[in-house]
Length: 412
Image (cartoon, rainbow, N blue to C red; front, top):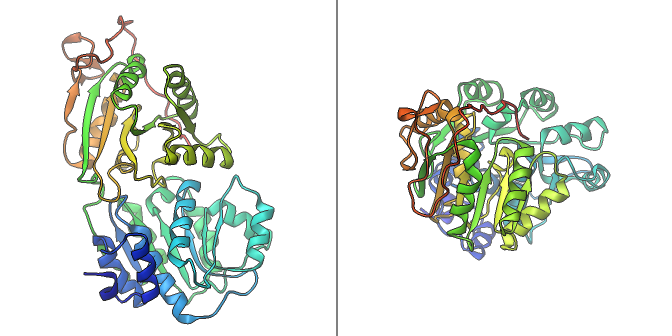
């Protein structure tokens, strides 16, 4: 199967070839034909498998075929994404597809100048990529109209549900043309997604390129049982073994990300941090430095679990285990992208054993243990503390007998 045989316009196929993209992925092969035919589509596939092209290429094809242009303040297609990083990634990808055509791609996200976005939308947009909150701000300012919008995409719809964007969606959807095509894409399939699809999609074609919730096949996973207080030194030891590689480290909280970034900086690593307390400019500068290799280690909260498409990321560290098991799948999906290999390491403290069990249930297997003694009911087996199994790894400090439990709060 090729992009030509899928029925895409020749100019789009040539643009893909210029980017070295010649063979469609499984989700693209299944989703593009019904999308070109105007059907509503619900697509389920692992992160990093090309979902943006699965909906973006058919929309671009149909907009190019129609040949018209948007009126001022109107939008011909709308792609909603839950995070700024994912929205920017989508906009960049779509922009590369339609470069050299008359189609205009616009991006509106929080943390950036709303006045500049108002001015941009005054000219109209063929493809608007937006986070729900900022889009509602612009709607309230009467800076954009959606009555001419014929295409709606909900990207990473499961995370939109997790973050409470369903209320925003209920305000946005009625403003769009009733005669529209709607597509919903996600890497996981929680129960509420069925309700979402029944509400906003009409007789959708369901395409599933991989079992929902399964990690990418090319990610080599590893697990270490380690006390919370010993995690930083263990991470430093692991990072020291591959200082030239790009590594992404996930923490549960914003303050934890900043503390860890400073510890890594003191240890001589070129490290940065992104989380919800950082401005959009700070986040973009950190990601740019990470992508270029100027910064080798990026510490992030789950604001980056989806939306970071940096093929050079070789290692992902779950410094803190997520308390939503599907998030683990998205985190490790930041490596082994575009057919490359990658490695994902998880650190489990005593208080995180229930999170680990939930992750194992979600992915359908246990992560291979490479260090430490498995915890039992929050303690190491036999009452002993866990230490790394590899020579040269961090040695556990003296036990204090206390059990630490992470605070259960959302990190944006």
